[in-house]
Length: 69
Image (cartoon, helix red, strand yellow):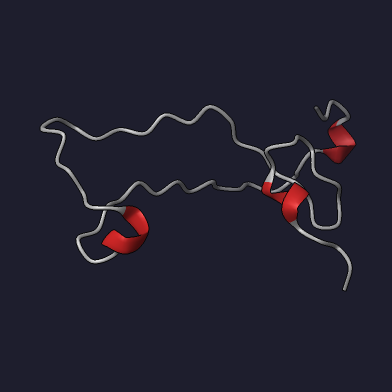
């Protein structure tokens, strides 16, 4: 957790989440089944790892990226 104000972003930013289904990508997403009620999304964690920094927690996608180029 960053607590030093000098290490926090100084520019406004946005995070975009997308929740969608498809009748065409069924091999990838599976068939959409209408639940009969409003579809919602709950997010438990949002994280950012700066380029070149090590992964911050085991589930981070940054942990699976190889930095050897």
